[in-house]
Length: 193
Image (cartoon, rainbow, N blue to C red; front, side, top):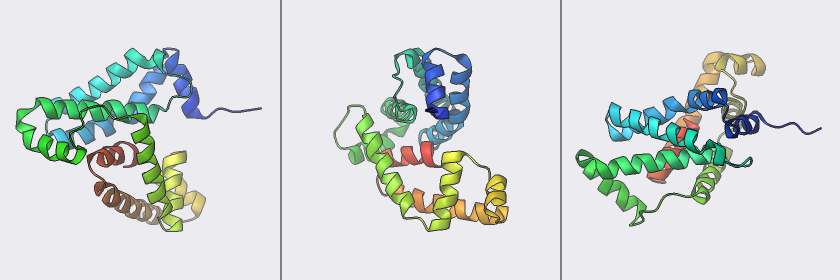
């Protein structure tokens, strides 16, 4: 008998318009989206606007998602495009827009799911480069959502050791993703940090 992952179950409920599933997605992503937006827009109202725009779009479009949709990719795309739109609209951030537009080339279209998977592939490749213990601990946090205490108990290590491994892994991944440009930075802050 085939079991479905919690993410697929969450997506299935979301497609059916389940408010509790929507709240669960909001709980999992709103702070990450807000903190990332605030870091680049440097304006709490604008950052809150990005969060609101992303989740309004999710609610309006949840019934149009497919069962095999990648919710992370969808949220990433909407978040990235909302931030880019605000950069274009904020004259006080014109210098940032010029800097990041140069990184993105003259392209003004929206990012695609292909770009998301390219970034996911880069992140996976970088995670594979982590030392074995760091990689194991990082993946336990990301894939199973285990707390530092749970991992310490499972791996028979101190909580401090677990947190040191997590911090070293994040520093390595952040540094590597920063070299890839704005799109990679957005990906890091929303899906890795």
